[in-house]
Amino acid sequence: MELLAIVILVVAASAIGTVTGFGLSTVMIPVLALFYPVPETLLFVGTVHWFNDLWKLVLFREGIRWRLILPFGLPGIVATVIGAHLLFTIPGTALQRVLGVFLLGYVVFLFAKSAFKISQSAVAAVTGGALSGFFAGVFGMGGAIRALFLSAFDLPKAVYWATAGAIAIAIDTPRLATYIGQGTRLNSLLFWGMILFVPASFLGARFGKELLERIPQEHFRKIVAAFLFIVGLRLLIRPG
Image 1 (cartoon, rainbow, N blue to C red):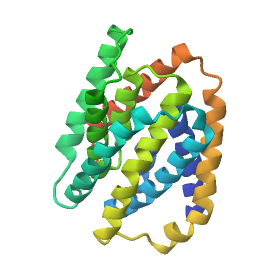
Image 2: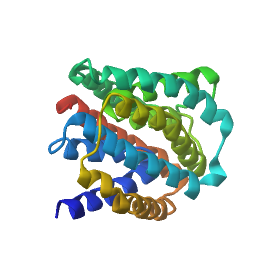
Image 3: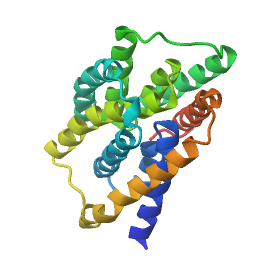
Image 4: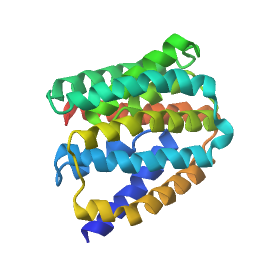
């Protein structure tokens, strides 16, 4: 029963993560952290997240834009290693609340200024990559920051998805290596369950892609903003 419940959770979270470009960790971490230690939860969810990122690249490969991926990904790699080390040394409740306020403020601003865009500059990409990498390392949830910057670029859907997937792989790989290097391991159910969890993540990603194709481009940014609002509210009210 526990194995089946996790499979269902992986499918649902992967579908949400594919539609919004983030959210898999946001859905899975609060649930699994009730039953497993936080470092083990972050390692497990991070592994599923890595494969979900890979599926985004496969399903939206026509949208790959290296000029966006590299300036986001490289600083994100450095920042996520720093954040992953801090996971084992500092409490993060206050920091999560700060992030929640920031996301809520951004969404309110976005609806007030619907035409707002961030220019696709190196400074914006480096800032977004560094912040998303840091929060991914500490909390396992850097996708909201990444989505904030990418949605502000107002990218076509395929470009948004492929870019988000490639950046997340660049950030998730050293993050997972750091968790393992700090001695974190998966229990036997989570480890061997990957035989089911990996294809389940693809099933969810495929289902998410089908939903995405039904969403008009002009409504896409609003949907991402709505999910950002939900994440920000949860981090503000119930961090951790």
